[in-house]
Length: 292
Image: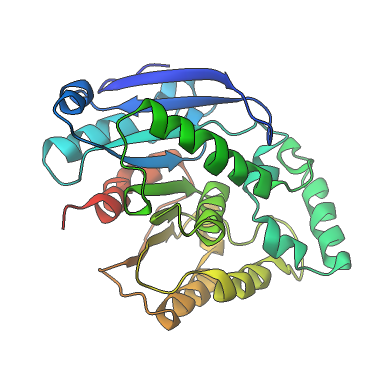
């Protein structure tokens, strides 16, 4: 995997006592070492699906987020504070969904509904949906193992005001869930095309209401955090509007203000793909990392 801007450091088989060994991809801007020598400290964005972020030649669908190009341009134009990106590879087809599905709202479902969700996941005949939900362990890895390593080895600003988390689809779900589980660690979350149904094919799906109930109770009150949501209108993204509107109402009730510490947008004709997330990536990055 290669980048056209900055430097990419790949850590193969990063160890963990909580999850399987994982590939970590750390992106540094071109001037990282010069700024580090001058005493500059960097904000950090932790991004899900690290294998999809930087190089379309190595992705399964020949698409990428273009993180290196977009981050480079934003910093070059002084649109954001200096930052680095830590991409965490997903656990593969058999673990991605299990590690990204918010565990607490799932466990609040009745036993019958939990079984229905697992059955629906199995009925999709997709290896993404086979393993037991284990996102709390994934977040423990992120907070207790990976973040301390990054803060020790790189010139970061480790406080929540400078620590952010981002993802799309299921990666968006785990990102907003991380903010509720660790509100003293993450100062902001960017959630693109949040996969509110949890599964694709299920009649009388209990998952969206479980998410609404959970986030109504656990999203932090406005004050210390920034939260970004968006979705398109095509493909899978066409499913998201009803739940997103309910989540937006929760945000309002908790005191968040659009344009200040909260963003929620609909992108007409955008679908569920890296090419569309790449096209609007500058918006969440500016929102989280602006210099104001």
